[in-house]
Image (tube, rainbow, N blue to C red):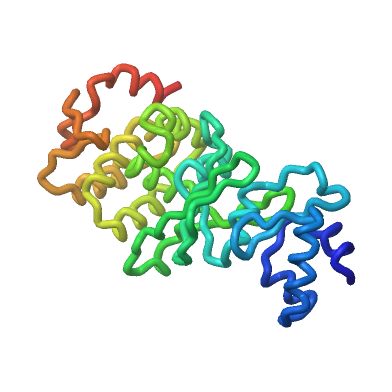
Length: 258
């Protein structure tokens, strides 16, 4: 297969994938550099390329597939995970992913790509925290719905803010409380427990969350107090979760239940 044919069949690819086809030597790399200079491909960032040839000349590549090509350990997180699960209330042009491999932020075709360090989990093999999502142009790894819920309520500043997270999570059809509990045990964050427990309690009937699961979460709390908003805004007090809701709690409850 020639370079032209390869570019006509592969929209998004890594340098490693290209070399597996054309060899590890300098010649293969020079062929790719030459194609890029001719405008037949874009160098998105180090090690990742997008074809601009044939049917791909005017096509916008899937940004999540682009991010997945950065390394084999990439996992989509936060608001990007909400989008991939079809939950996001408001779409964005930011791609958020976790990876042990350091990658500087970059922009490609008006999408901002930003890497985060993976959440440290002492016994990660005991928690099902990621899953695969099939896209039209490939498969990407993303946090599970349960981990996405916990991550987003824990870091709402990275997930679109309180309103966006509340409205997005309201679209969840079902939550496996056992997976939520397993993840919370590994995180060992009472604040994450309080925030997650409060959200689950609001949707307990439609998400089939048992009182036993909620009781176990309450047993994981410390003395508190905890705050739903990151700026420690002390509005309405929820004693069962030792949690302060923000002052606009009426709006919050509307967002949660819409």
